[in-house]
Image (cartoon, rainbow, N blue to C red):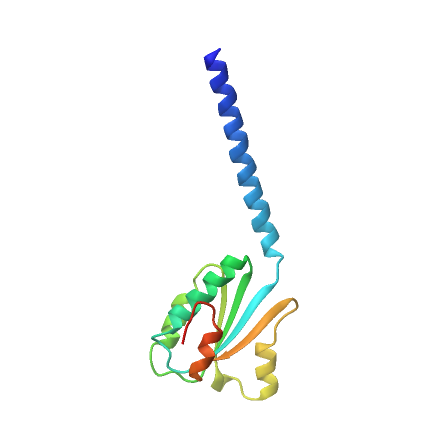
Length: 141
C-alpha cells in the first residue's frame, strides 16, 4: 500500500511541475505580443554611465514584462562609449541600435530613425543634459 501511495504522490508532483512549465511558456509567448518600450538616448562621452543606463532599462523592461528597444544617437564620443554600447548589443532582451548623429543629416531623416513603430511607448532622453538621466528608471541624479 505504501509503495502505491508513493507512486501517486510522485504522479501528482510531476503533474504540478508540468503545469508550471507549460504556464510559464504560455506567459512568455504572450509577452512577445505586448507593447514595446522604446528609449531614444542622445549621448556624448558617457562611458562611465552608459552600461548602468542600459542595464537599468533592461531590468525595468523585464520587470514589466515588456520588450525593450533602445536607439542611441551618439554625438561623436571620444571615449569608450561606443565600445561599451557595442558590447551591450549582445545583451539578451534588448534591441539596441547605435547611430552617429553626424550620420543623420536632416531633421526628416532623424524623425524617421527615431519614430516608434506601431504599438510602442517612446521616450526621448538627452543625456547631454544632466537632469535628463533621471527619466531612466533606477537612476537618480
